[in-house]
Length: 335
Ligand SMILES: [Zn+2]
Image (cartoon, rainbow, N blue to C red; front, side):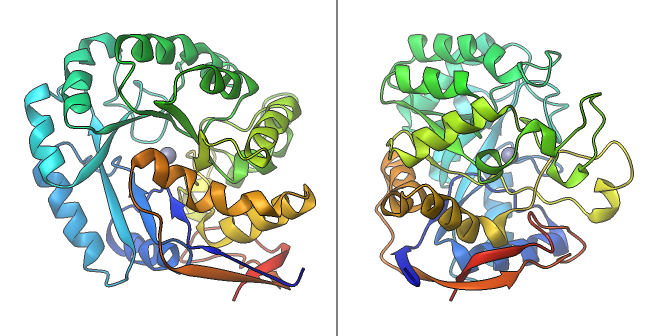
């Protein structure tokens, strides 16, 4: 096969940042995706309808045809009364970060149950709850698994509330999501389908590749295999959310690197390569462009995107950021 055309994808987990960086990121995202979820962990975060509208205006002002699916940060102070205004401002989802699990989560949630009235309001407004599913303090490889009982508890209390376990990274998470009702799904990143813990740190736990550090951390080969298998099988509960999250080369390489991998420019070529190697190219479009839209109950995109089999070298650096697979050769290229 020398070319493949798919429905233009949606990215259901993307960090578009702020300021000059935001302008670059919006433009790069628009080259690949028709729509993108916009994560709310800006500084300050997107807390209310006013923040959301302001950020949305800034994103639109970049002047691309990318459509923004706006989210807000579910924080201890997010009250049920705030939810109708967030919905009216265009929010599709609220994102919950447990306290202290990742970039800008110092204001995250310690007591999830205290937010049950807010979840009830989100359910009534038909909003999606996006979860960063990790328990801080656990061993990095076990943090996601340790969160799964909390996911189950929320689902049990709100069986109709649509919940996305973001960036599923473990076999345990894949099994848990499969076992629960259809209101539970998971987004899957490109890097968790490619990397294992060995690509991030050495056996003593010191990080040898800061540009591969993300949260949740990439795990064992068995975890990666479980993710690949469920995605290649065309399971409707698992869809693309890249969690593309750039940090400057300077910050990444200065010791104590922040978590996040910038994958937007290579996401589709890398996925095409993976699905091709697995003999599952026929499942690519559903993963990138259908299952997520179905879960979010939005129409499928009309436009298409073509990839050609033509090797190219990924940039070493883009606007001060080292992208995923920097300097490496990829075999599929967006035409
Ligand atoms: Zn993220």
